[in-house]
Image 1 (cartoon, rainbow, N blue to C red):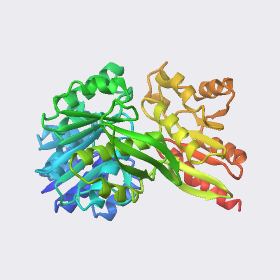
Image 2 (image 1 turned 90 degrees about the vertical axis):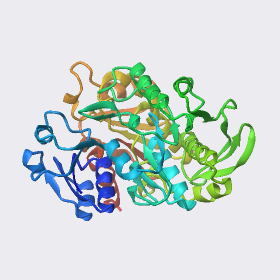
Image 3 (image 1 turned 135 degrees about the vertical axis):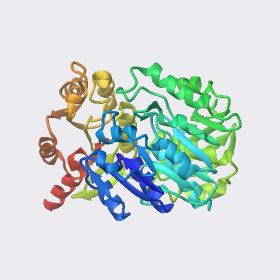
Length: 465
């Protein structure tokens, strides 16, 4: 079968391309502004990429077109697909058809922690000999890829609340009917498609309401809003968290070398002691969610203890980029104010006694807007020095609804913190190089490449030796 992908260079679409290729299909795709790493990844698979969207890209007609959610209805290639009435699917529909098939899926949803928790479950199933398929929204470092076909009975999927496609505005995750689902958190995000928190809540409520009655919903029990959402399901609901009211509890949390130790309890009974090679309380919760789901499904605690220690994490989640002249550089995907605060807190705990320099780029469709202006002013409190770039592409946010990095820096200074804002990455980098000193931990946070700030900083520091 010839399958053509519109928007092939997106992380999820590129993973689907690899899955289709591995399954023996002929794959092609189109995108615009094609650049590494996805372009080189796809080229390495022998998948041709057409640069730019044109009607002739679907001539001769492929057997199936998969349309990524980056594609708008007025896209000329999408128009050709519609005019010629070519068979088409969205990304989640294609995953169900080609990756899940007759197997059982485990789906991880929530505003925060989806990627790490998905990667954890996939690794634990693999390391205990269950050969899972998976697709995760980041590079799983144990596999050096974000997908795997596998031959085992389970497929692990990251369930995204973003919309599906121009012809289907429902959240992606409503297309999945998992055997087990995880709900990590519910907060306002994606301001470009959700006008307010109640709309986000309704999206998650729709997801849990459509879970099969025989399935399992594992939800974060420390948050009343998550419990409210979980109350809409007819599935078998269980809760994990730090509080004693949760079915699964993490207790006796202890920072260890390179991670966190904790004791897992089920309904007050000790299941075992675990070490997660991830920093922060939020990652203990992500780990507990993964363990609880698999323990409920019959995987042994001893197997999981041994497998967990081998988890290498997901790229750009507290990733060590390098250390030069005693200056440690970390790269992280954090962008929502809650994620920023938790990541800073985790790094502070993991590198106690070192000065923490937080560097931030607000570039998502939500962080470009003023909606989190006040929240960000509280998110950086545990940093010693904060450098913030003005949001790129502010024209993408509505006029009069722009986030101000200058105001954020002023608010942080008013709280007694050292903070500065910069109009571009070049000037930020110059100031960062002047400010850092041996012993510092530099935490770079952005959901994009930040104009290659992390490798540019490392290169400059290395050149100073």
